[in-house]
Amino acid sequence: MAITAISRDQGINVSIVRVTSSDTLAELSAVGYVTTQIDAIKALNSGTWEWQASDAIMAYCSDGHGIFEFSDEDFATFVPVAGTEPNMISGTTDAFAGGSAAHTFTVTGLTVNCKGSAVIRASTNSVSITKALPGTDQLAVTFSADPGANTTVDYIYTTTSQP
Image (cartoon, rainbow, N blue to C red; front, side, top):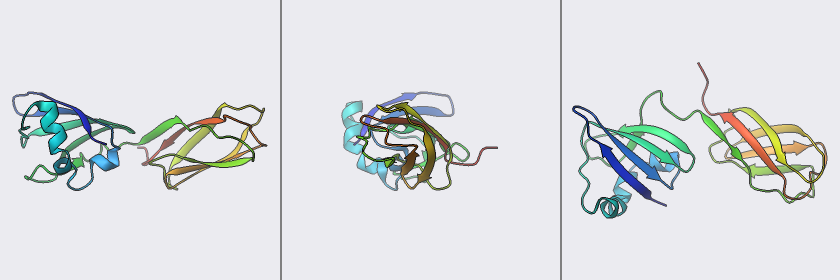
């Protein structure tokens, strides 16, 4: 996975660097991430990228958007700008083959503290969701009966408390 696009909107005092990455927001903010992306950035920029102390980074990742700054002067690590952490996780699960009335779907970013809801997008059999419990990177769903093949679930959860 890597940074797949990068550009700078030059400003007088602050420049906005737009980054697109096939990585997640968590991976993007890992210690030393920028250092691991030097070759990809050089290839996209056709040369060395010059980071500036005033750069504000707006990122689009595989799991959402984020606003970052650098942790220090070595330009090695993106740090989320305070108060801008992503607070919504939403999407559609991979298809479940059916065969039971319960299934645990992988949903990256969920924690046991997330609040939200889930609804059936598609199912072979007429069923309802009786319980949807978020866990660490997963959503455990209990259906009223076996939902059948190709069942998918739409979900939306908050990852931080709302004001």
